[in-house]
Amino acid sequence: MAQLLKVRLIEGNDDSIILAATRGGLPIPLGDEDELELYLKTTEHQSDSDAILLTRGGGQIVTVNAGVGLAEAIIDGSHIVPELTFWRYDLVESGARRTLLYGPLEVVNV
Image (tube, rainbow, N blue to C red; front, side):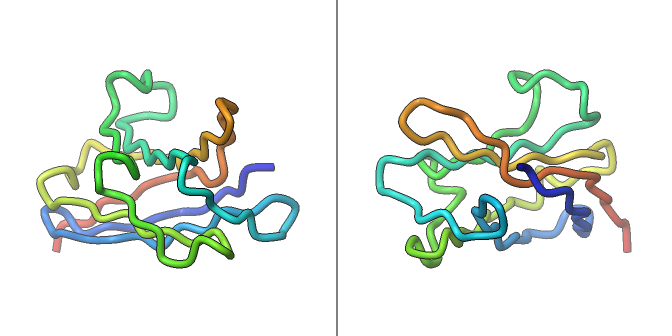
């Protein structure tokens, strides 16, 4: 089951988020062939094709500890804009998509 988590980022700053892959509270080991995808959206209803997409294959998500399902998303500051209000983190393994984390995204202007 996906876990709800609020994320806060600073507008225009390069940032990163540590992401944990879990199922039922237990870590999901990440295989080399597993795809990791982070969507940054203006609303939760925005289509995935219109969202900002960061991926493991694209180099924006890197594995921190595959054995315990930890990864880090590296977010370029140009993506962190006030219009973003929602995020979602998916694991695609063996062709099956599973949302692991999702929730409100707050972009703060300091």
